[in-house]
Amino acid sequence: MKNSTATPALALLVLDVALGVACVLLPPVVMGFVGLLRDVFGVLVLPFSFLFGLAGWSSDLSSLSSVHDGLMPGATTHPLYAVMAAGLLGVGGVCSVLACNTPEGAKVERAVAPIATGLAIVAAGWDPGLIVLPAFVLQILCFWYPTLAFSFRRQ
Image (cartoon, rainbow, N blue to C red; front, side, top):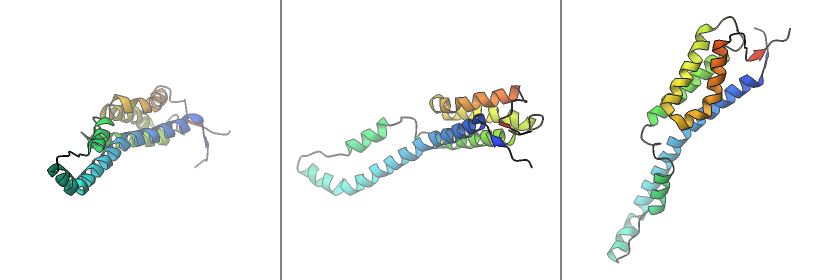
């Protein structure tokens, strides 16, 4: 196997896919952590809120509730979509890297890469999908022009 150096296009694709996976998986993790904090602090404050309620004061965890409700409204509704989108982004990135040194071969990988990335954009939603748009365009260009290799070989 011949060793070749990567071009900026391959580095951009790998970096963009990694950033897309992070941006797809991070909101459900953060929202779950904030929800867990809200529940834990709710239990810790419960005796005091009961006593303050008897005294006529009202205390609640409005600050954590506002953080949980205001960060991202749809982040906790379907975390399975985020996992599926991250998996599809990973598959698209791996297929692009596998097809990077074979301009005449790897037709299946060149076809699967933009399809998987497109499905990931649909599964994640439009806003996180915009992050992986450059990788999607590079994958489509490499599908239409197979001689456009991501990496070059020294001759």
